[in-house]
Length: 391
View 1 (cartoon, rainbow, N blue to C red):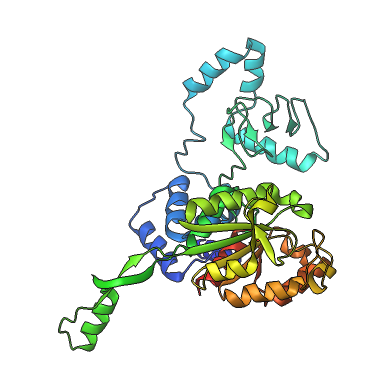
View 2 (tube, rainbow, N blue to C red):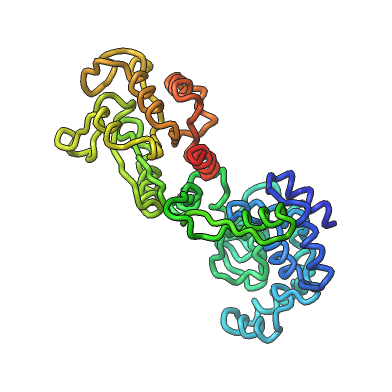
């Protein structure tokens, strides 16, 4: 059973190692979780999941592999009888109490659910028998039954279901989904690596162990410079036009970046970078900065991140005067090439889903110009981008 679970996790692209699997087996051998599905769930999650973006995937695989296996004394199924009686006294008439008692307990409820899943062929709402919504049936969502099974709803309504059938608390952490501010912070944090600078005052444990081993066991202390956070981020954001559809997502990215990086400078552009960028999108003339001055001010120690949908007329990239805002003496392709040559550690984040990139000519043109350093604005995409910037 556990081997099948391990293999399913690997098929779901959760990076579970054999060492972690053996750790789980060792914990089970020492009876860390005894006859308790919920305890085993938390044990397995702690042993096998290293990154919280895989938690939702783990929950789905766990449910698939262990569905229907309840604990010997599962608190979700072994509810004290007096609790249910008090609940019934509060909400039901005598006739309704008799109808509920006639269900025959948890086993009968689950058996009835299996029957109705097999028999029901269409959506149902407002009733008391079929699986549906807004009714008093024991099965469904958005209704009420004190001995029911919630089906098809992500969170409880009356919070009276005996078993939350489809609870998935970590759905928004999946690495293929568009991000919220918190998840963006987690992804951007990968770039906050510490560069070594200053005097050699800090003990290098790994280096000391290695040098001592090579020195026939005689202690050979190795020191390294202190650690300082020196990550500097230059952020260029596309605004206006088709980017209006992605404003909220870009706002979240900007908010996350400001909270994660001490050294952050941002500018705006429209569609493609030309000879000017600006600090304030509403006061372009007053806050404009020539790109040549930007290149002189911020050296190669800065990482460059451009954010935009790269969706525009091809002329805006390859022709003089192609800009829709003002006359540009040189094509956008020339300015993009200058930027990526000046900043070897540079990437482009695109809020358009990666599956749709092939359908837009300008996206393909920019990808070729920047040597395929374009990544989708998802957790997985930002993770890849931060790894590229870290090299």
